[in-house]
Amino acid sequence: MSQTVADFMMPDPVTVKPQLALSDAIQLLVERQASCLLVVDDDDALIGILSESDLMWQATGVEPPPYIMLLDSAIFLRNPARYEKELHKALGQTVGDVMTAKPITIAPERSLREAAQVMHDKHIHRLPVIDASDRLVGLITQSDIIRAMAAN
Image 1: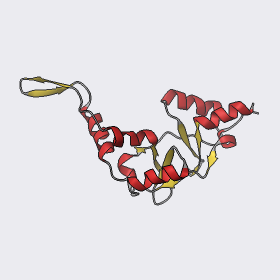
Image 2: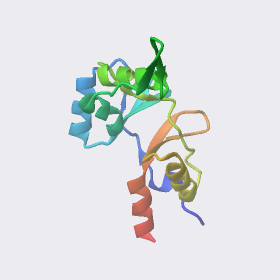
Image 3: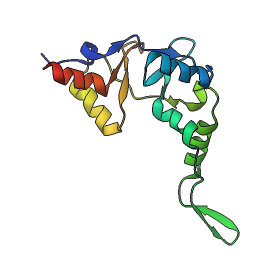
Image 4: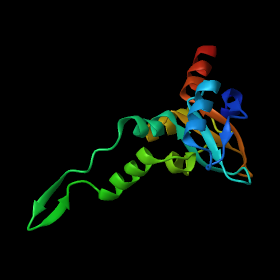
């Protein structure tokens, strides 16, 4: 019998609303010793995730994209829309301003192997767990998968 996400996920992860002040969210992360907060709407549907890496924009700021000038016109060497998104995160005041919207999720009945593969392929450290009715039921992290490996 293979191990599933439900076997090792953290049930009932910490959730917040997008209107929450960023300073309050940071305090909550510290108090709960969490690496992320799951963001839900008024119907408790998952709409985003606020991770430590989302908050790094607040601490580091944003570099303008490189460009060259040609005949009084700026030609950007990187997508300027990415800069706008990064700037929005760096200046954000609420969870909704800074969170990553539409996070990748996984179902509780999926195997730990599948969860590990998704995290590896997408370069992410955690997956919100959503049941068949799109209800948030947990969170699985790389640490949970390592814990499962140690249990074998």
